[in-house]
Amino acid sequence: MLFQQQQTHQQEKPQEQQQPSQQQAYQATPVMQVAQGGNRNPKNMPMEGDGREWSSGICSCVDGGTCCVSFFCPCITYGKIKHRYEHLQEQGYPDPEHGGGCSSGPCWGHCLLTSCFGMGWVLQIFNRTDIRKRYNIKGSGFSDCCLSFWCNPCALAQQSYELELEEQSFQV
Image 1 (cartoon, rainbow, N blue to C red):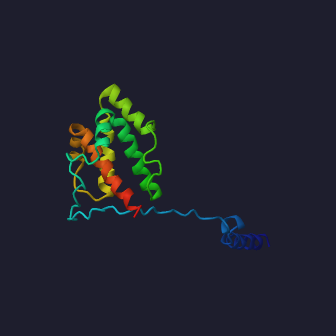
Image 2: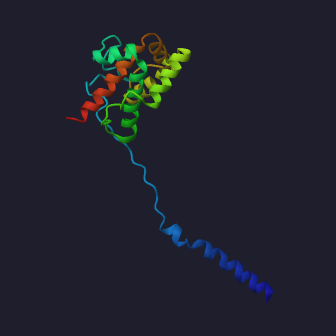
Image 3: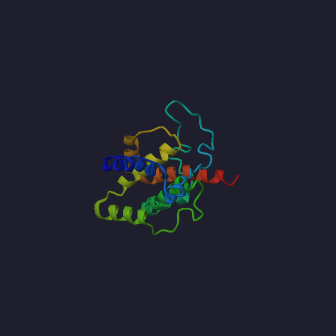
C-alpha cells in the first residue's frame, strides 16, 4: 500500500510540473525594438564589394565651423559625434539636441586623455570604426588609427559630416 501511494504521488508530480503557474502564463515577454535610421548613403556613393567611399574627402572640411572646433577643442566635437552616433544607433532618429552641450562624459574623457597623456585621439579610433561600419565605408582599423592621430580635426569633421547627411535625410 505504501508502495502504491508513492507511485501515485510520483505520477502526480509530473502533471503538476507540466501545468504552468499563473505567474508564468501571464508574464510579459520583453520586446526588442529595432532602430531603422535614415538614408545611410544619401549622396548615392557607388557601392563596391568592400563598401563605399566617405561622402567627403579627408581634406574637404565641408563645414568650416566643425573644422575650427575640431582643431581647437577636439574633445567637444568628439563628444557631440559620439552622442549623435549613439542616439541614431539606439533611437533610430537624429538627436534633437544635435549632440547636446559641450559638457558630456565622452567630451570630458577625451579632454582628460588629451590633457594628461596626449592620447584623446585613441578614443576617436573606435568612434570612426563604428561610423565606418554603420555606413559600410571602406577602410580598416589601421587607417582609422592613422587618420585619428595625424589628421585629427579633418577626421572628426569627416565623421560629423557623414552623420549630418543621415540626419538630414529625416527632414525630407
